Length: 250
Image (cartoon, rainbow, N blue to C red; front, side, top):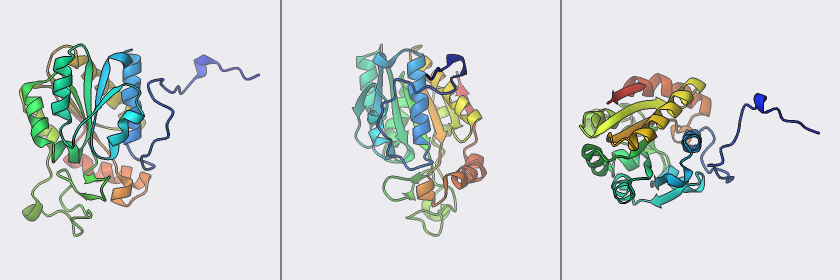
């Protein structure tokens, strides 16, 4: 007979996660962030009170993996849809889950105005500096000199403009109450991101305004690197432009 000592249990799959196999590439940060969101929902005991807004992009199937109520948004419109859901159902925890193309390109207007209005929602922003789903094109967050499918010689500031620090911009708006930039490349970073997510969800019920959690992430498929190489490249290249830590905590 196998006896499991609960005191020695080091991993427990949260019941908020479904049993479906994820479609993400090996080494992708999305799966880790999904797990953290599900753990926070489980620990706060709000599974039946949480509504997620699914994006367009790599995480379009987020609703398959986290067992809560979901709404599917048109490309870039998640903050607008989240605004409607939260205003209609103010007793629900409402969050968006968006990549840099969805949030910082086609959805720039919706993101800025939802945050400026101070909607009591959580915005989870996955920033890997590239369009992962559609072939690795340049994103607003692509670094200067970074090679992509549409900038094979590297991003050129005179031609393409500067990388967009969307989170820094959102921190300047009066409607945001908590804006932070985290990652999930190490155990310590995972713990900090989970703590930030928990705080953001709690803020949404305190009517403080909008909470924004940016997770600087990897796209080893789009970057043409192994998962380990991607983590190292992210630390050495992404972090100097998008440094970790809280940008605003009101």
